[in-house]
Image (cartoon, rainbow, N blue to C red; front, side):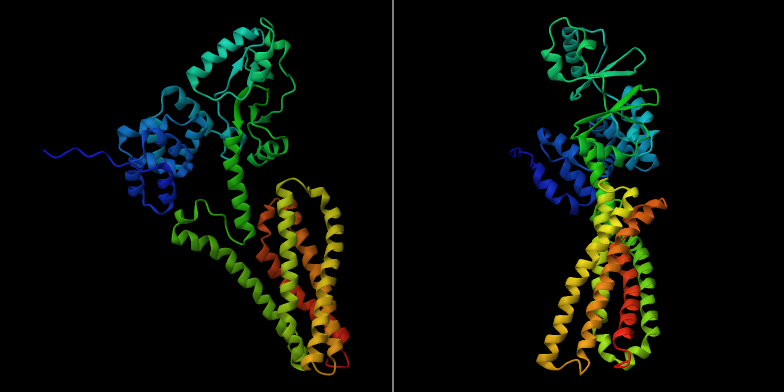
Length: 441
């Protein structure tokens, strides 16, 4: 009789490393081999989209365990990531109370505080004594299994009256009513508050939890810091993709199909390509100047790349500052004045280096002819003008988009560089006509 073999297990950290390259079938089979002691933590560490796909791929009898492991707000994320038929199947695995909570949360938009909140939180009545409150909280946490960050004091109509920390509760004298030591000034957000605004509050105030109320100050739920971390990561990723000159990906890199990847990148790339065609048009406009002073064409890449780089720097700085609320729409004039000075300083640095380089090369290699110093002045002055223009336009474009109601991140660095390329040529040849008139032109 053959000896029974011990079942093979896969460590959670090993599966985490291999997870991105596994097919769905391989993920399911591997997940079943994770020890029960670590399987829960591994499952909860997955993205909502991955959790939805994994649960739906499991046998029907195994789905309930994993759906009921999720808090209501996390269950909402999983349901939203599933297709229409899958949503019904996932909701069917929840108990009646949780299903009711999830259905209520699904009524909110995904990017609103209502869609992020957890409707389960610790609550007390103001007339309770400290001893009664402690006994009641012990019973509440045993039933719900929720981690208690703060305890909210509500009246019979669920209006938010105050908040009590656990340390306040344990320090309160025996028999003292909660109403006498609760904090009545409570920072809240409404159900319709945008998730970016919620994230900024967590970041600026160093919060661990934030209560959500309706228009009549009735308590609806809480948002904890772990809820908002993923949201802020998604927002930052979306902005980075846009700044890079493409549509934001809706999933991890390897989870995006080939066609979808091409579609999301081709649109902006085509727009930028059409924009760069204007560069050829501008050069065609100055073809007589280029033909008479071929030396000018040597410095075209230098000029336009410097303007594009300075514009990309400025637009990236302002987009991020707007996202963090370090700069507001009304600050555009202050930013403009600051960037004019910065652009002049940066342009002057590059201009001096460019002028010095042409003079040195002339003395070493005699590369630029008898009018080399005029050429050097042309390049140096053009660099000042182009970098100044690139810096100013790159800084102002996000403000213009925000004022028009668009996402400032749409002012991508490649788009700014393309804009400055065309205008940089005009500045360059305009300066050349001033300095080289009567000599090379």
